[in-house]
Structures are given as structure tokens and as C-alpha cells.
Image 1: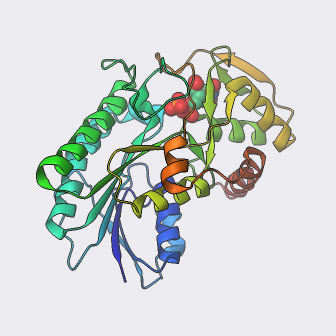
Image 2: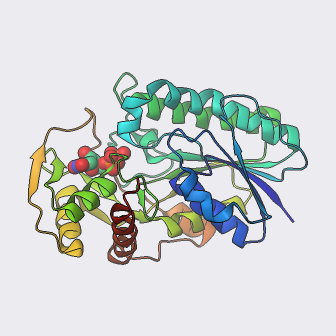
Length: 316
Ligand code: UDP
């Protein structure tokens, strides 16, 4: 039975990956410092003998007893609100954290997968974004702590692969949504869904003409899983190639929740908010035979139901 370590495994995406790998029959060890991860996300796995949770900050060297076959390095803040509230943690989890995770993989002779981001493309001048595009990032902007940490981390992963023989993979994750996102994490899906359910104004930043492409979390996890089974070392985009303006997205969420919230236009939360984002997924299609399966409407219905249950329960 394969044994895997997932850093950030109590986070939104990490907990879904943990669940999936347990279902695949793997032993899963989750490392998380619970800065933005939550114990509630993995509560249902804690009694499973194939699951283990270690409260550990991956920016510190880690010792794990026994064999490890795979390290999935997902630990990171992921929301612009978190980049502002935790700028140094964001920088150091990408830098020291990635180094510690890579060292664990090397020490154990384990395979390694790094979760990178569409933010490496910054405010992209090539559209849709192909993996060979180098990006348009403001290194000193508010978002730079995340973008540059992830870019540095990709560089580090490739150097470990080229010069130390690490067996690595890099997934570039585009906007992803689904159950267990923190209600107050400040990203567009939690904000709009919570606002719509509470009847509060839906806060569109700017004029809402900026675009994003939203991938349901189960589709993303399938893509990550398939990539983990390959020997492909260059980055692979995983995301949904159907693009929407943020204003359209606000209207869709208002319709799906049956809300009467008004849509209001506000200042951007961060400067350098990318004007357009959409993955070119040709590489994932050809390499992994992967493309998203869950429609935005269906994924949002599941997400809204999860948010509704947590809001009623007074959760976070
Ligand atoms: N956004 C918005 N209202 C909100 C939160 C976000 O209009 O309450 C916009 C934001 O300006 C961006 C898009 O939604 O253009 C996606 O933002 P998010 O923070 O979810 O992720 P990003 O893709 O910017 O990292």
C-alpha cells in the first residue's frame, strides 16, 4: 500500500485530495499548520486507520517515521485576502516550505508533486494561457508575495529535478471552487455565495469585466491524481477553460441561490487584479486524457448547499 504525505492536507483542495487518495487505497499523512486549513475539513477522516494528521509547519524540516512513496506539496495561502494578512507566511511557505517538502521527498526516495498556480502568469498578455508563457507579474505588488513565491518554488522544483534527481511534477491550478472553501476567505466564490445567501449586496470589484474560469474541485483532484501517475516533469495547467466575466458570475450566483441581493460595484481589493484568465488545457488533454466534467451550474449547486449548511450551523 502506497503511503503519501500531503502538505496543506487540511486545506480546501488538500482535504479533497486526501479523501480521494484514501479512497484509492493509499495511506495518507496530512501535514498542516492550520493557518488557513481547518480541522473540520478532515474530521471525517480522523478515525480512518489509513489516515494520520500531524500538526506541523512545513517551513520547518520534517521527520516522518517509516516509508513515504509520494509527497504532494499543497501547503500555501491561496486567497488575495490571505496574501495581505499573511504576506511573510505566503512568501516563506513557497520558498522554505517547498525546500523542506522537497528534502523530505529526496530523503525518502519519494515522488513529488508541487501545486503551483495560474498566478505565475500574473496579469497575462497571452490568452488563453499556455504553459510555455512566462507571465506578466509585478514582483513588488501586493499579490507578488504569492506569485513570486510560487514562481521561485517552480524554479526550485525544477532545480531539484535537474541537479538532485528528484522525481517531480508541477500542476498549475486555475480558479477552483467547491465544498469546504472558508466562508470568509475573501475569494469570489465564498464572497458571492455568502452574500447572496444572506441577502447582502454582492460586491463586484471594478466594473466586473475581468474574467475567470472556474473549475469544480473534484475535477481538479482528478487532474492532479492523473498527473501524479505520470513521469512528466514540466508544468501542466489544470483548470476549466470556460471563461466568464465576474459580473456574469455574480448574476449566475444570484439566480442559483434565488437571492434578491443587489449587485454593487466596489474598488478592487488588490491592484494588479488580472484582467483575464483562462487555461489552455491542451497539454492536460493530450497527456492525461483529462478535461473537466462537472458543469458550473452543478458544481455551484453543490457548493451553495454546503455553504448554506455551514451558515445555518454558524460555521466558518
Ligand atoms: N472579486 C470580486 N468580488 C469579490 C471577490 C473577488 O469582484 O468579492 C473578483 C476579483 O477582483 C477577481 C475575481 O473576482 O477579479 C477572482 O477573485 P479571487 O479573489 O477569487 O481570485 P483571483 O483569481 O483574483 O486570485
